[in-house]
Image (cartoon, rainbow, N blue to C red; front, side, top):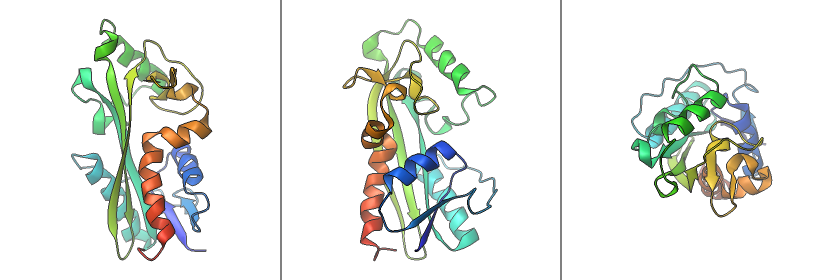
Length: 197
């Protein structure tokens, strides 16, 4: 079975991606599975650039097919921040504290101005292709963190259609509606064609 490496150290993300690509006919491996401990500097100014930087770095190292993603939370009231800096935003703090700080920043902001979205750009790099795929989910910043599923900013991202935060939504449903699932579903459609690789 041909191997695909997922270029991330985030085990929560690897688990999500494996579930999304289940049945694609490839052996999905994490960096940890492959014994790769490489610090990749994300020097891009967009999600697309950073996603490709990560995928190219691991592909150049291994020669294998690599998928990577870059994703983040864009809060309209904060002019799109933390955006591409989501992982490094207040990086000295655990996400529970970061989430509290964001809620504090939006303390007196009315509901209609709390709009936000999660954006994910997935990339696929092999010997013969470089391609990116984008997925988004629209929502609002909640007034308090809720839920035990998911990770990162999920507990403060309120999804109006479900009247729940992403961290309260069952993982099976989240894997159908999330920004990451939307990007990786597009990627999976191409992977399943196989001839593109």
